[in-house]
Image 1 (cartoon, one colour):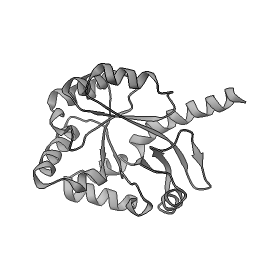
Image 2 (tube, rainbow, N blue to C red; image 1 turned 180 degrees about the vertical axis):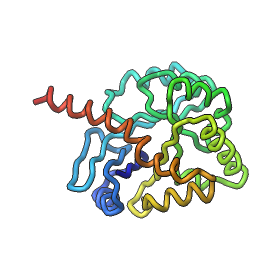
Image 3 (tube, helix red, strand yellow; image 1 turned 90 degrees about the vertical axis):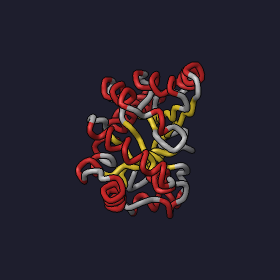
Image 4 (cartoon, rainbow, N blue to C red; image 1 turned 180 degrees about the horizontal axis):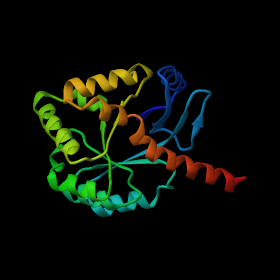
Length: 208
């Protein structure tokens, strides 16, 4: 089952297109509650950008737990701290924070089994220098056995990618092995999504 964990807007067109592309689950920034269609389930996605640990702690204290929670650390301190907080599902790497992802960061992420999330839209927009930096860090993460999760970063339905296209782009541009690329949009995100679905069902049961 294919999963896109990084969608900005869950409009009707996006939900319909994601279903046609055979996605079974997506996570959307604009949702506060899950949405279920005939072909897929969409859950809330929470993106937290923080410069200080105090700021990040305050953000995390207000989230309810059912959202797929991604942290984009904007300082070395928040990058390190976010690795060991259980409320953080993934740590995002993009052009704003790529310099914080070094051996020490990946070692901490490995210790706490914290996945690295990257946005395909962000990767494709990088200039040559940043693309080279991303290539080295992604492959370092893979050598250190850091779980990799990839989302489209789509804002509109036409920015969604077919799963096979995602796998091919990761393989061609970043030398991500095909089994790892496949797992980044299936098994890896499902480990998180399945836990969120249990929380959602439990919440629905209590409300009833």
